[in-house]
Image 1 (cartoon, helix red, strand yellow):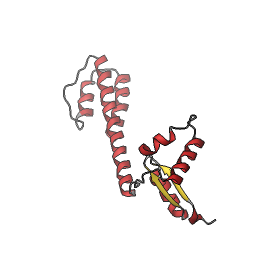
Image 2 (cartoon, helix red, strand yellow):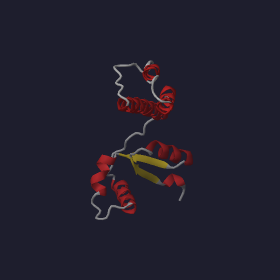
Image 3 (cartoon, helix red, strand yellow):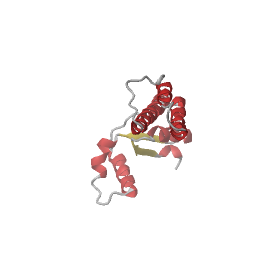
Image 4 (tube, one colour):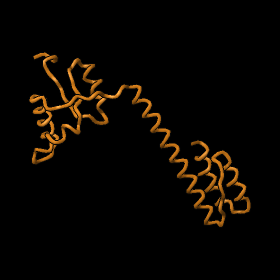
Length: 148
């Protein structure tokens, strides 16, 4: 049997695009199946294991009981990675800003509404009369905040 005689089927998931590219490179025919349509077939097995799922997928292929879905293009994946990284950095910046505000409250300092651009300057002005240990601690958080 040649590789062209095989048909590989797999459920749609976060690695679908990667798997499909790998199969194409190897010259293997592959289809990506809709996981929601395949789920009832796979749930018929008593023991939910990878081995039983593979058997269920093979049975679905043989019986033609599947819906083919397209994998996302690489451009779409790259944009999603970029947006996810941006979201993570913004969340980290907000978390640090809120932590600094909480630490300042323990010193009796409450900041009003301050933009991200002016936040480090406003904080350092508010800390001028406090001991070096407090200033150094908060300054390290502000350095990270500015880099984000």
